[in-house]
Image (cartoon, rainbow, N blue to C red; front, side):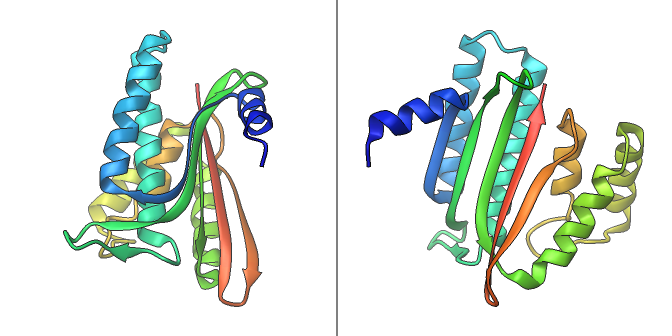
Length: 181
């Protein structure tokens, strides 16, 4: 692999930070602090930094919780393998936060239904839906309240971009991108 060419590709795509490997709670904290510092130094508005951090947190938690290889660490935190990228799209003039992970294909219909439903809502509808889901406890599970996609959509400046690719009958690949700007 030619790392110089790889670096040129990352720069051309506007990537500020990328991580491929094990994603854990401690990595989430460290990446968040590093990104916040870098964005502050670049003059990014505080509300944009806050939204990027919130989306990054939701995406990394999704990778840790829902990856096919998710596991508990000895200190009872979750970790799993995935890919996380954040950067600035010159074309859209917005920041982006992207992640991907392997998942179980039987989760595809539920994820598709949730994101498509959320993508069809305006900001006012999203706010009301968030309150409704939080109050009702609907979609609650052992890893959270099921509010992650709604939270990302509230902070996004356009519909959530996602793709699910079936790898085999036992494995799929989930990719999500949220634009903030």
